[in-house]
Length: 144
Image (cartoon, rainbow, N blue to C red):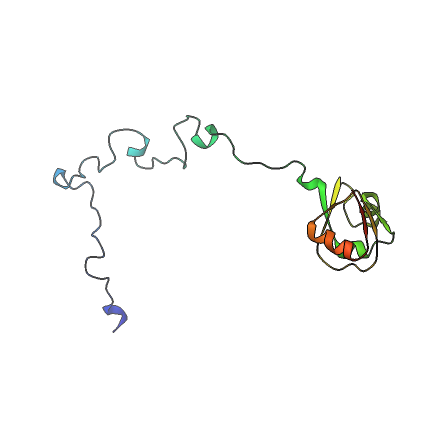
């Protein structure tokens, strides 16, 4: 087999459509473009979704979905971050002062990632189920 011998399989290709070659082809005169209008003319182009000046459908339909406005207010705190805090009483203010969470955070949630070995007193924090089990096993007290 040589590169110049390679051909497509029999019947897999079709001959190119020749437009404007008489009425017997079914594509004579207007060449399948119809009569008049922007799309019938040479260079008659408009962008995708353009509806001739009518308000396009992607702008007529309402937006869907939900974006929470308070998503960025809640900061995540790892168990390993709690281990490195200098105080025994851990609340949102202590987390902000230690730099574990952003100053703009309105809530903080402790998630189960890392280890904790010393007992702490947690106040006013959201805690995941897995983190709560680890904290109680370490001897921490939790106030909601």
